[in-house]
Structure formats: C-alpha cells, structure tokens
Image (cartoon, one colour):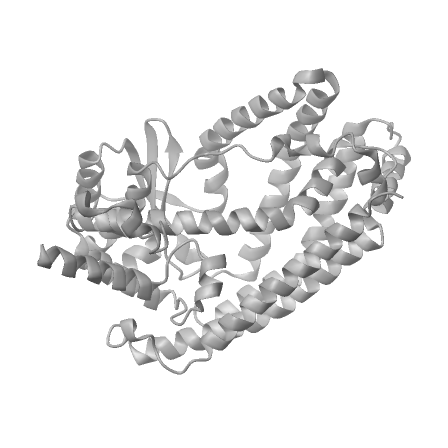
Length: 444
C-alpha cells in the first residue's frame, strides 16, 4: 500500500493552522487588555494606546477571516486534486494555440500564467479591504485606487518579463545538466541574486517609488560621518516617497560589496523630532551590517531533488509525470511544517541580533556576553546595543517610542505569539533591556 503523502501534507497544514490560530487567539486576548504594559506607562500616551489597540483589534479580526479562507482553499486544492487538473488543462491550452504541449517549458509557462491569474483574483478582495478600509480608517493609507491597480499591473508585467527566462533556464539545466544539475542550479541562483541586486535599485524600484538624493545638510553629514566611522561603504543616500502610499515609516539599506545604499522613508524624516533620532534608526540598521547579520543564503534550490524522482509522491498528489515546477510546489507544501519551525528558530536568532546592535550604539559593548544576551531574545537586542555604544542611547529610546506611536504598533504582546512571529523584541522588552544596561553601567 502506497504511503499517503497527500493526507500527511494536508493534515500537517491543518494542524499548523490550528496551532497558529491558537497563538492568534492568545494575541487577540492580549490586544483587548485595557492598560499599557508597566514598562510603557508614562512613555506612550493613552490616546496613542487606544488608537493602536483599535487598529490591531480590527487587523486581528481581518486576519482570522483571511487565514480561514486560505487554509480552506489550500486544503481543497490539494484534496480535490486541482493542481493535476489544472496542469492538464494548461497543456491543452498550449496545444490549442498551436504549440507543442510536450514541451515542458511551454507547458510550465502556461501553468504559471494561470496560477498568477488565480492568485491575483483571490488576493484582490483582501488587499482592497486591508488597504482601503482598515488602513484608510486608521489614517495610514495614502494611495489612490488608480495607484493601487497601477502597482499591481506593474508587478504582473515584471513577472511576465522576468519569469519566462528564469524558468526556461532552470528546466534546461535539469534536462541537460545530468548529475551536476543541482550544482548548476545553485550557480544560476547565485548569478540571478547578483543580477537582481544590481538591476533592482536602477530599473525595478523606481517603477514603484521616487528616489531622490538626501539634500546636503546636517542630517546627511551625520549619517555619512556615522557610516565612515563604521567603515560602511556608503555610496548613495536616498529619500523615498513612502508617504505617497502609506504613512508608515521605515529605513533600510541594500547593495553588495562596496556599493551600499541607505534609503530613508520621507515619513520617517517627518515623524522624527530631530536629526539624532533619525541617525539612531540608521545606527540600528548599520549594526546589522557591522555584525555581519545580513547574510544572503541560497536555500531551497536543491530541495526538489528529494522529490524529483519519487513517483509515488507525485502519484499521491494526482500526477503521472514529474515536471520541475510541480516537484517544487509539492516540496513547498511538504516542507511547510519544518519551514515554520526553522522560521521560529530564525526569529529567536534575529531578535538577539537586534538587541546587540542597539546596545552597541549606546554603551561600550565589551561587557556584552552571549549568555547574557542569549535569553533576552537572543539577538534585535544586539542591534539596539550597537546603537547604544555609538552614543545614541537617548535617541534610540526616543526613536523607538516615536516610531511605535506613529505606526500604531501593538503595545500588549502575548509572549508565545511574539516568540513565534516576531523577528524583533517588543518595545517594552527593548526599553527594559536598555534600561537594565544603563543600571549595570552605572553600578560598574
């Protein structure tokens, strides 16, 4: 008797949904709490707390509906063998337009085109409601309906341009690469990563946002001085028109080798009270680079080899052939429970990195030891530490609080929910940790 791969995969998906819904219910209860955490009393205004609470409760209700629809759709697609049916129909479409349906590249592209249309249709109602109802009701949405559909159309066009050559190259490698096909796929992925990092800021990002150089002045000088002191190879410094779409604020960096760029959202500049608060945010992000926490990992490409020649696995899902794209889809479904566990472990590591970076910017980091920071979420706290060491203790506190208020971030967070979902420790945890470091520094 064949192993019931399909039943195991669908069952694991449902179990994961039940577990994550339990965590969501715990967080929903935390959001209902009428008072601030003690660490935030006197720090966050009551008005901002009430707005944040209302915003996240509404997002929580929306999330419950969205996740229920998602698990029902995914389970139905697998259980009722929709994927093999659609793969067959996409082959018929290829033949209908006069092409060879036995050509795996053409068949795969037709299949992916249908999948893209399906994803656009099913995600559209949720995106519209999230942006134009919830985000608009709480004062965040700034985009027009025209801009919304324009962005989606641009995304579809980019998929049409970029996906066919990538898929074609991958399939040809599998067919012609022989025993070394996996190695060739890794090489392809590495090359694509370099190409995308090169063309994204030049060709793709400007399609969606307007990037302007940060004007000369004190803020630019302070950021350049900070980058220079850390030997960060800053080449360009931009302001992006994030306010055109949302009043949420952020800052990020990208690039590789000696060609790094820092991008500030215009909303971040508007919301921070002074230049030092903005520089403190940049200091936090630079802390990730300084401690080598941003690592580009090439994962998943070899995963399909685990299922590529496993006929019984394909048959369990309703397939009688073993095309590359289907192998990758089946692998993705099968690996989801393990992926979530790895993601959870990654969150713990990421949170510890964050803590160390901020502390480094406010006090000397010599007294930081791994055992001491490990359980404080073992790593955002590192990013805060890094910011602290460079003398931005007061500014990092002020910027953390200001961004929390302006973005209406959740104030009461369930610890189980936070450990599973959050890559960053909560504001209460970060302020408490920085305060503890201040006390320890004074006692030395």
